[in-house]
View 1 (tube, helix red, strand yellow):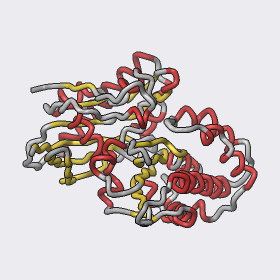
View 2: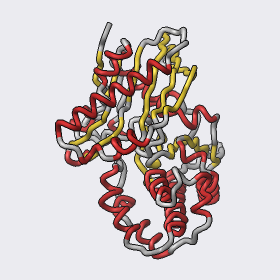
View 3: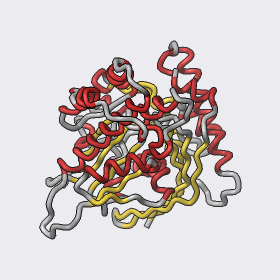
View 4: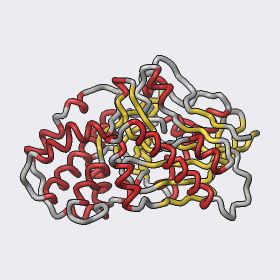
Amino acid sequence: MQEYTVVGIMSGTSLDGLDIALCHFKVNNDEWKFKILKAKTYDYDEDWKTRLQNADKLNGFELIKLHKEFGKFIGTSVNRFLTGVIQRTDLIGSHGHTVFHLPEQQINFQLGDGAMIAAITGINTVSDFRTLDIALNGQGAPLVPIGDYFLFRKYDFCINLGGFANISFIDENNKQIAYDICPTNIVLNELAQTKGLEYDKNGELGKKGSINNTLLSELNSLSFYKQKAPKSLGKEWIDDIVKPLLNKYQIPVEDKMRTFYEHAAQQIANSINHNVQETKENKETSVLFTGGGTHNEFLMELIKDKSKASVIIPAKEIIDYKEALIFAFLAVLRLRRQINCLSSVTGSKADNSGGIVHRVH
C-alpha cells in the first residue's frame, strides 16, 4: 500500500475563488481511497477578479507577467493554507485558471505558473494538465473523469455544476465517457451581476422571471448541442455565441435568467435521460452532483423534475472541493507515470499522462 498527502488547487471560470484542498490518498492493488483533510476557498478581491476576467485581452508580455504573479498568489495562498498543518505534503496539483480554450486550433492556456508555486512553497508541483492532450488532438477536457472512475465509481453518473456543467459516466462498452453539457454559473453569475448581486443565491432572482419561449428555443437549437462527444466549451463560446443571443432580446434580466435556468435544466436532464441504461437488476440510476451550482436550490429542483434518475447531493466538502480533490489525484497519477487523461473522454490520439512536474527536491 502506498500513501500520498497532496494539495489540490482549482480556479473555475465562474471566478468564485481559489479552492484549495489537502487530500490523503491510499492505493492498494489499484483500489484508491481518499480523504479531504482540510479545505478552504480564498475569495478573489475585485482586483484579481478583473485581472483574471480580462487576461485574454492582454499582450504577450503582460500575460506572461500575470502568469507569474498568479503563480505567486497561488503559492502564497498555499503557504497560508498549510500554516499549522503537521502532515508532510508530498505534492501540489494545480489546475490554474483557464484563459484560452480553443482545442480545435490546438490552443489553450492555464494561468498560474507551476514553477513559481513550487519555488514559493518548496513543494513539488504539477501544473498545465491540458496541453499534452490538446497536442494529441484531444479536447484537453474534461479532466475530472479519471478521478470519477477511480474515486466515485459507485455512482452511475457524475455531474459538476461549475461555470459549465459537465457529465461523466461508464458506457455499455465499459469506457469512460465525459463531455461539457452547457454553460451554467458563467452565464447566470454575469446576469445576476447586472442587478448588483455576486450570484443568484438559490435562484431567487431567476424565479421571479418568466420563460421566453422564443429565446429558449434559440438556446436549445445551438449547434453545440447536436455535436456528439467528445466536446468541450470555453469562455470564447460564451462571448461569441451566447452573449450576443441573450443581448438580442430586450426583456427583463429576470426573464433572461428564468429562461436560461430552463435551458440549462433541460440540457442537463437530456444528457442524463439519453444515457440512462436499464440494468439487469433494474436498479435506480444514481447521479452525483457537485460544484457551486449544486447549492442553487431552484436549479436543482428543475433538474430533479426533468431527469429520470436519483439525484445524489453529497456532503458540502465534496460539493465544493471535488475538483480540487481530483486535481490532487491527477498530480499523483502523473508522479506515478500513470494515465491521467483518457482518449475516450477527450478524443485525443492516445491515453496520456499530462502535466508539467516542477521538482524542488
